[in-house]
Image (cartoon, rainbow, N blue to C red; front, top):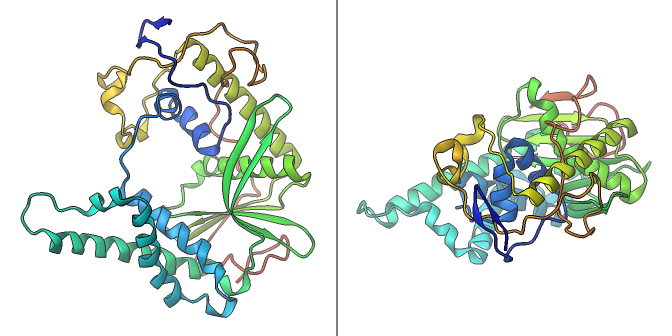
Length: 340
């Protein structure tokens, strides 16, 4: 065993990362220590009402397409919210604790009121989607599509795409639903990083650059679109390789530096963060000799690696935003304006 001076004795229970997803890439760019807590230490995080609501809403928007086009209505979609919540609760009974009143004495009545309010908020998000896209005119090629590609460097990129639309001409649109509000324009590039990541993976898998990337923000009724090109995606690939090298170095040395920022207030691990007076748990991996930058992930002592930017490149002038009632959904027939 090898000890790390800041974290204590290592153990052999954990294993180094061997792939990268958009969420974990964003974690490392936000705070390397957060990445370590989630990927290396695998520290548990309590579910939140907001994240759980997002899971339910995504499930509704996916399953609604199981119905014939003429039946994809607002009332049907709203009714699905309760069913999807019950389906999720059956798989994860601990989520019931989100709406527990505690010892205040009102018992089930208080719980029921809180749950009813939460479900109503989810229904509102689902209904707002209909002002942004018309599901009766959409026939997705893929829903909840798991994608994975291995780059020449050995880095595996993976993720789950909410929806893939394919035009009769073969052009591809990648769509992702967000239950929060759209970012301010100066933060649009960061928001598009996830979509460019997916576009890169599909390009490497299928040999064709997706024609359009589309983020649908149900919380604010906004749609953010971007049309990437090969230069965009090559830039994203270079950024991800640099990011992976930085992750690899941190994995080998055990040096995961915290980075204080505006999102720290929402972090579940403040008690363990040196920025807030905490001490991380003992580092669970062996400290290993540093590999050359860009070494494949399955090289001896393999792990991750990489250096961090904020996103896959600036959004640029092609990035556009539309607001309800300017709908963005329709049967995808290629680029151009996105009317209903």
